[in-house]
Image (cartoon, rainbow, N blue to C red; front, side, top):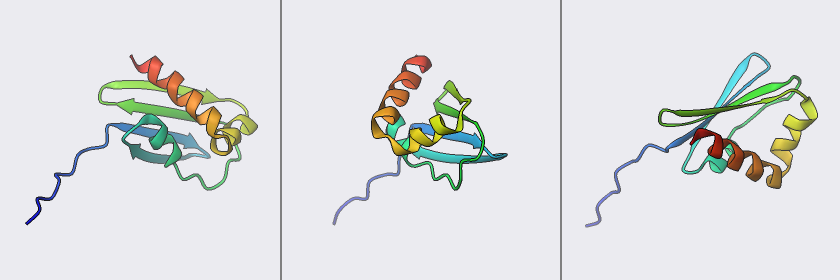
Length: 89
């Protein structure tokens, strides 16, 4: 008989406020949480809010192409995730 692992809360959450909607995702790492965001269509600027417990950081994307690049460029996602994680400490 095997023991089931207890479900653990994923520590990182990412919220993208865009087009008067909120897209939310949780992950084991900040990068995973950002990658799990499922965005329908990017037509305006957006605000990315990341949280870990009581810690919180925000990044405003003033240009549409920069926000689209976040979802199409893995290197940029890694850089933004690291910068936001440093801002939370």
